[in-house]
Length: 595
Image (cartoon, rainbow, N blue to C red; front, side, top):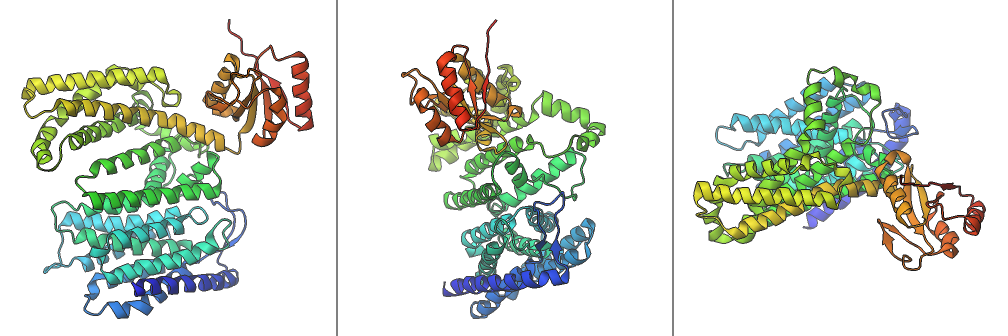
């Protein structure tokens, strides 16, 4: 333990000092990133802070590894270090000479192939060809994932710090002490770099830093997977959860760029972090949200290990569903200009994509497939445990295809896929209940017909119906919730106070929320009815009568006041306008009439 602490502190101290040195000499070497349209900064910033990260990591590792590596086979940790250094060299060359994307990809695949060869601790030094292929691509993919993630101040370094810490903690037994020291030293170097890279950044890491970080983490993550003795490498699920933040951002960007007809290697402000800022979050908040995603992935990985990977698959599936929903929501945030979609419209796949995505709501159907399987399985786990669970799981496996078919047909027949997620309400709840109930009844009838209900429990079907209802409602309602959160935090939206919490006022608030292009965020009601005071109506607080108007406007930093009813006139309207004139706040009247 003392060596772990020493490695962390040495690399942390070295990183802070080396970053200051690199920042000072970078301008003289021409290593400065100037502002560009596809970059997220507005001032020239020194780069190549990756040199400090790599050197600080080597300082912490070199000072401690000789004391713990006695008797340890070098092949268990030296290949990871050499691969990280090799990718660092590739990054330095790219920073200085602008290598082509193909050159970087080929280099990472070559280095990854040799790393996999070195890590294959078998008498013939051989692995199944599928393992070799996937592991090589994995190494290259993770390297470039961190390279892509380096798109906002403090983001890549912070996410890498979280991932390296979880790898060292959760997979310590499989990694070995020297690799743990490497990861801990990397954590110290990253923490020191974050001091200089936090918003507004005073130093960038450059490709040499992101590729070094990605290679060290990717190499360490391969060790427990390649040395797994079970038929299926379950540890790979743990690794994916730990690295969910960079993998999610990379997959998100590559898929959407492909659909938009853009080059996957063309930079741009279209990453997850950028879309969060477009929703109204500050740059710091966007970075922290991705930190939180990394921590959530690490906690899910911990749950997989503590509860048993095979037993905790539903938890991993639930986390995957949440991430999938966030991806769908963020994909709707504008990030490209209209002309960027011309290639998509010309694509031979355009009609298919249009039909599946926008008419048949393929994303919803695929999501419900996951929910049906996860809820049905989890119902079995809630009903049975231990040897009893092992006895009844074959019935789950045998009946799953039938249950899938019955429930998908019922959900489709209920009209669920004709409903909009953004306007999900109590009326949609009835549709969900009807679809789930119909699906459960058909599943029971199918089990009775094919299996005569032998080996099936009625409690399982009841639990399954309850879980599936909750899951579908939660996923559909999540879009409305995310829209409300985004609208409430958006800096582009005007903060609106609505005078009058009656039917017209409530209708106006609903319209504001249903029409993001209005850029209006209702923050409070003022109403003279004492029965409404200090209550929440359609999610907006009613602060009180006219006498509290000025106090409320100051408290909520109101940008505009809306008069919702024709009855707000005479002396009341004059008083409202006087207060608003004093606070330099415009007043508008939006009359909603019913004909």
